[in-house]
View 1 (cartoon, rainbow, N blue to C red):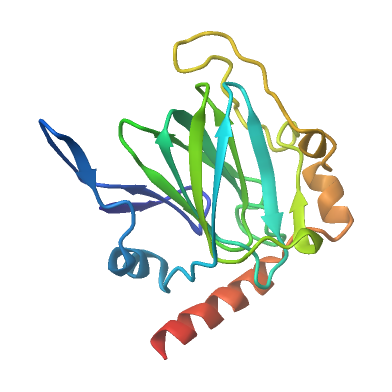
View 2 (cartoon, helix red, strand yellow):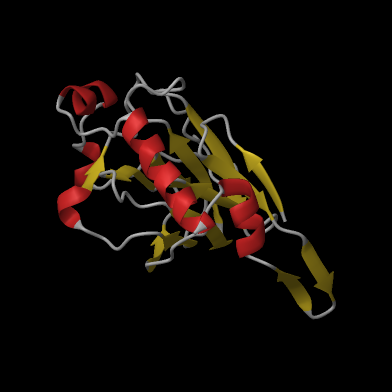
Length: 209
């Protein structure tokens, strides 16, 4: 299992080693020792979510108040999605930057999105299934969103599906009506870089005992 930090600090691409034989394939989807080595603290699993999406569906950009936010370890066991991480931490050296990873049922990669970052994805195939291992339970009062089509962020969303057929973004009303990054910043919704770093330092200190 290999961890590669993305262009947005605090997010990692995880590539598992797959073992194939005539019966099928086996892999480690998650390894706590490797996770702690890369991230600096364990994943405090509090909730596991699953979504199934048609081709073209865009979910996000979602984030939660810090603390405790909601870190996510994201996998796609069926189908394919373009998974996107956005730096929404006010004061971050990479504020507004995004990076993406293709998650699918071929390479079986995962993405870890740490506390304070925004997360979104676009489904590239009907019935694409995404599994999220979350560090906090869902709490509507502290869950927020930024419009995934905000031109100031400029995410390069796919225009074709896995079979190279044209697709258009399909959004929920909530995501379509979400504020732009600038509007969310002006209204005080976004987490601050220093607050996020303080919380992560606390998590690492707990891990050291």
